[in-house]
Image (tube, rainbow over all chains, first blue to last red):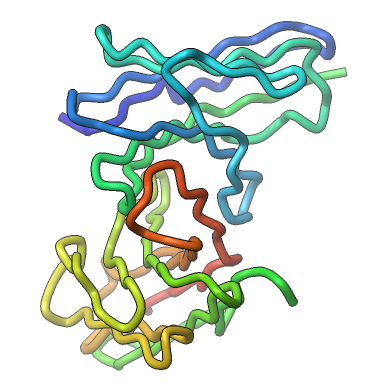
Length: 109
Length: 116
């Protein structure tokens, strides 16, 4: 079983829509959690860290449910520029990151 | 530049040859990481450096893979006797520290390796 699992999508949504992604992780000892964004043929870039209390950054809200071992990302008022692959990332050790395969989002006009 | 720099950006080589990939981390970052991303797969952790030492090499797929870091800065990943399954994008990342939680890792553009 892969350590981090995500629905690969693609999610096709119109501009202005709200979209949510979930991911699950298998290691209950995992200690830190992130969402990264990866554009086609580009390097991953940190979108936001995910804290136990949940956190928000502009149009993006991340939630962590340790009991159920899942992480979510909510994007409000989607923009065309939000089209990318969103990577759920979990760390057990403080250094090595375990990446999901990513969820593909396409925002259309 | 201020980001993580990797070279070459693309490498095409014949099966059986050795290749060397280079990573220049962000200045002042003590931790350096190598990952591999194969087509349709997620990123796979290979090795972690804290300074010049590698506390975790567990992700290296075989003994054909090795890496070193010198001067607490530049790192090279060497693949000997390349095989076709080594074809992937090799990504390097760095962070201020590898010993604290929630340290963001900053990635380079990667080296796209193709083995013919």
